[in-house]
Structure formats: C-alpha cells, structure tokens
Length: 293
Image (cartoon, rainbow, N blue to C red; front, side, top):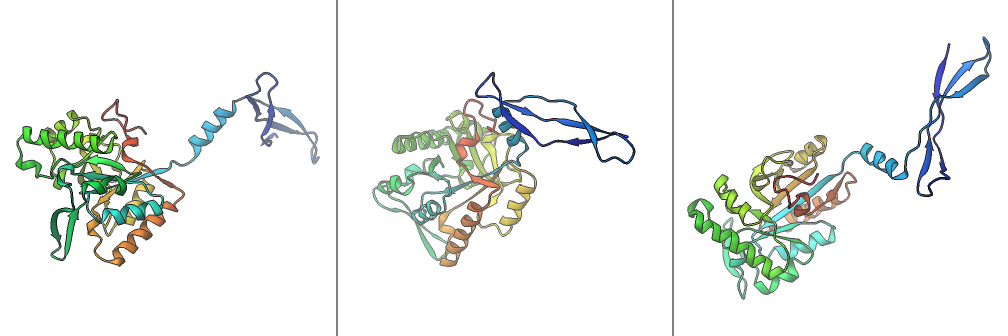
C-alpha cells in the first residue's frame, strides 16, 4: 500500500538569477518498510520553479475580485458643497454631471423641490472650489428634454456643453448623463460623436457592467432606493465588477437624510471587498464600447 503527502513549500534563492526565486513544491511518496512499522522511505516526485512575479500573479488570480464603487450626482446645485465635503471626509470618489450654461455670475435658475425646498444652481465662481478633486461630466448645456429637440439642437447641447466644461475646468470630460433619463439610438450616437466614452441613463440593472453599449449605461440604483443594500449585496454575490448609484444632492431634505447618507458612505468605505473608483477609469477611450475590466 502507498500513500501520498505534500511537504511544506520551500523557497530559496536561485544562484542563476538574483530576481528569481526557486520555488520547490516537493510531492513526497512514502512507502512502508514493513508491516506495522512507523518508518517510511521518502522519494521526491516532482519539483518546479517559478518567478516571484509569477507567484504574485497566481495569488492575485486566486483572490476574490474587488468590486468597484462609482457614484454620480446631477445638476450642480448648492447642496453639492455640503455633499463634496462629506465625500472627502469619507474618502469617497464621485462624478458630478453639470449643465455649464445654467451657471452664471451668481446663484440662480432656482426651482422648488417637493413644494418645500428652494434649489439653486451654483455660481460659476464656486465651481472650481466645490468640485476640486472630483470628476466632471457633461449633462448638456441647459438641461432640456432631449425628445423635444431636433437632432441639430441636441448636437449643440451636447457638444457645447462638453466644450465649455473642458474649457472651464481644464480637464477632459469623457462622461455624460442624459437629462430626464431620455435616450435612444440616435441621441446616443450624437453623444458618442461628441467624444464621450460613456453615458448614463436612469435604468436599473445588476450587474450594470459590462454593458451592451457604454453610451446607454444602466446603474444599479438611485442613492435613496429603499432596496439599496439589497442591491449592493446582490451585486457582491454576483461578483459584479462594479456597483453604480446616482442622485441629486437637493434630495437630502432633513438632517436625518444627511446622517443616513453619511452612514452609508462610512459603511462602503469600511468594506474590505470594495474600492472607490472614478467612472472614466472603467472605460478604455480607444475602444469606446469596451470596459477596462
């Protein structure tokens, strides 16, 4: 009768290459010498070598994938000042989708949200300081209903919005968010031709990436979705590469809303299985419809 045992991993420097390690996995075959004896003969069955970098790649392959967390916020409103401060405090990354044509010398373009809260756009002079360290994306020039525009009007909204944001922030603007969530193939083609590499809709899907077309991206959910943690858990269980949520900072109506969101950011930041990411880094600009993972 024969039986097998795997001896401990032995690592020793190779004399032929300083940067290489000789990794010897010695599978030992043991044969009983006689009936009832506890002593065995041992013979090495095989050994092989591997580089240290190769071993690192092996361990990385075996490690469970880290899910990237991305978020974006629309409209460039005054509550973004408090939101950005909160996100910085929690080490969270985010993208802000702006309508450059609606930012003027002072705060303006006000409207009333849920018949109680007055919402205002930030002044132009506030944009740099507010969004310092965050990613800027295009939300068109003036936030129109896409379905009410001709294609030529839509093209101006998309191209001028991107150009003016790039000029103001002196950074590439590669992302887009459809106003009111309206989109179709023709609208998406204009967004693509204008130089964007991804565009967000208001559809929900888990996993949200990879997508059939990165110019018609779904998200996992809205930030205030009652099923947020359910969807988050489902994305992790599905080993989704990305969890993506979005919203508007003016939707925080009370101090309790702000506290709940702060707790949400803390919980995500403390999760060892995820990491914050910026949306543009998920996409390869030279292959428009191909994620980088």
